[in-house]
Length: 432
Ligand code: GLY
Ligand code: MN
Ligand code: MN
Image (cartoon, rainbow, N blue to C red; front, side, top):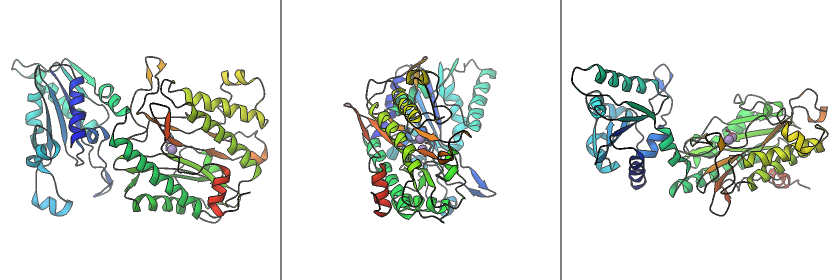
């Protein structure tokens, strides 16, 4: 309970007097007819409450002097609970969650307009149409009412206040991310040990998900990508439906969600356990780029520094392979890597796989700070028709999760092997 109460108080302290913030729980989503997707709480809501039921609303009220946290949640209902499982209910919520008061969700339309009246400013996120409509409806009601109440004059995004808190991971958040990283590393190892020519990509996906679930991570943090051969060049390939061929590489981009926190790992390895010479050449470039980018992960560096380091190594490598020609700095200036490396190197990671937090301040990249977690994931994709035959269709990405520390960084996913020697050793002891 403590971290959630502390976070609500920290957010309230950032809100100006006479303001209100609303954070809605995620709705249930239909998968087919009367069957729902597995429920996943909205990350902001989870961060502030640790409460994972749908049909809930958190209201933070910052008065002129006092402040309070109010929760709306599903009422107890014996019959529904027989079918769907226990509900916390508003009576137990204050003691269990540390909120100041709780009411049944059915009272939102009666109570929320009153809370909104005469406040100067409302903070909310944009993105859940039904919730937004409901709040805008209440604002309209207050504006139209004959009573002398006023609706908030300003409606602001909550993100800039809340997401800056989420961008810096603290205390047990880091421990949960370490565990997500450990489970995901082991899942990649399981896939490497299992892979064989003739297996389906979906079968490696199954190995990955099996490892996640048996370790208590009940879902992938995003749909797993298992792309063999040229499928590796489709950046978000999720069909995972091809049969893997001898001589091909397979790129797996998969990470679990453990207690709401994501890992995000990519490894690329030979289906048969041995890299060909052409694959080795490209792999070594991507690995050098990734290590250079990880080296650039330290406090005070710009958030863009890892990407710049990766670009330099990728371009150098492509020159060595004879795919690019010219002066290194000129090639960097011209973005010569783009046809081969067409995505960014980093994003924040946390409760969401592409986690929140501003990347720039005004137009400038922000600096890295202790507690930030980011991915480092350069790649090379040989999709240009003009690449020599032996490289055509090769797609390689290597992705790790990096925590910025006071003295530099900690690679959360360092257990997952990534040198050619270590991968070949793990896959069959045939390295040499
Ligand atoms: N797995 C999605 C990404 O790497 O950004
Ligand atoms: Mn990824
Ligand atoms: Mn990523």
